[in-house]
Length: 140
Image (cartoon, rainbow, N blue to C red; front, top):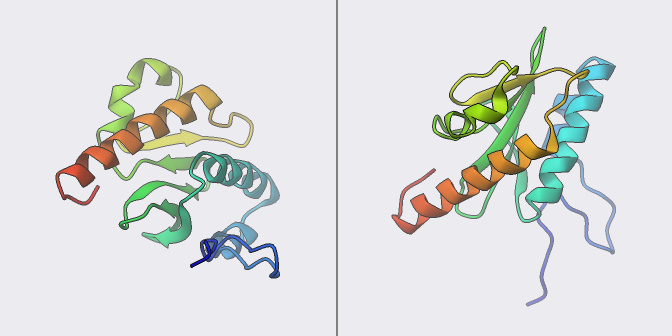
């Protein structure tokens, strides 16, 4: 059976399909839309097998088995990167000096996007957390 791309990635022989993220992004002010589109592409690059979904009303990246690796959203005064976990950002507290955040969310702006070092470390921890929970048979 030939490999088929996830529903949000076009095959070489088909027209591109609209991402479920597209409608969310389309309704945003231009600066927020551009910043979140950059983040979306960074996440797609780092999570090549993830499917773009909406989870809790926000764009998110779902891995095989239904595990959500990351999500993002726009608010009036900031943008957010979601871990769907309360343990990831506390583990990189030293990297988040000067950033507004909660246990499960990093806040940023179009003028101050998430640096690659933070995004990479965030995903490294989140993916390890998901793998560990999968090995125990639990949802992450």
